View 1 (cartoon, rainbow, N blue to C red):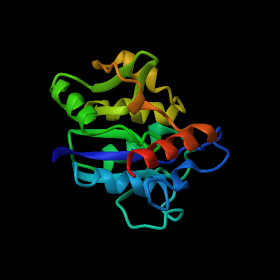
View 2: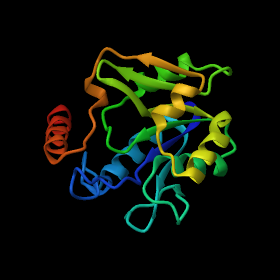
View 3: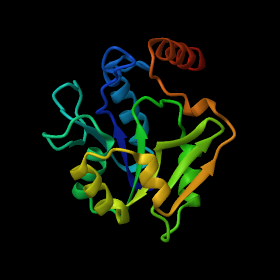
View 4: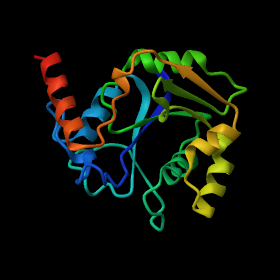
Length: 194
């Protein structure tokens, strides 16, 4: 078990999907959120779901709510998570990446050190800011960004002590942004687990 908490980010708008992707059924569970929560629970010290509202979910979990006055923005989730948890670092994962596995988490954790602010997964297509480790050292900067309405994670990471960890396999990092990507992932998971 990894000795840090994992935060599942499930508070986005899902505008490209056309409906809330965190609530789409997946892997035998009523929602992608529940699938992610249940599969990550045995791996991490604790698992939490970052969201605007816990009311939309039909299962019990550790929820971390965004500040009510903030529109959809990951910076709100980071501020709430780092304020609520006493940990020096958190693992974050977007709800729509169901194929990121234990090996990816282990590689990121092995690459981490106390001198860093963040350790972020990177593949040939680019970096994956919602798959990585963030340190408490970034809280003040997240708070500033939130207060100013600046939600550019890439900019934050480029100005911080960030280590990008290269992964050659693109497959685990597939995002389910559009209906066809969700359908493909649903079928891929189904055929792998028959």
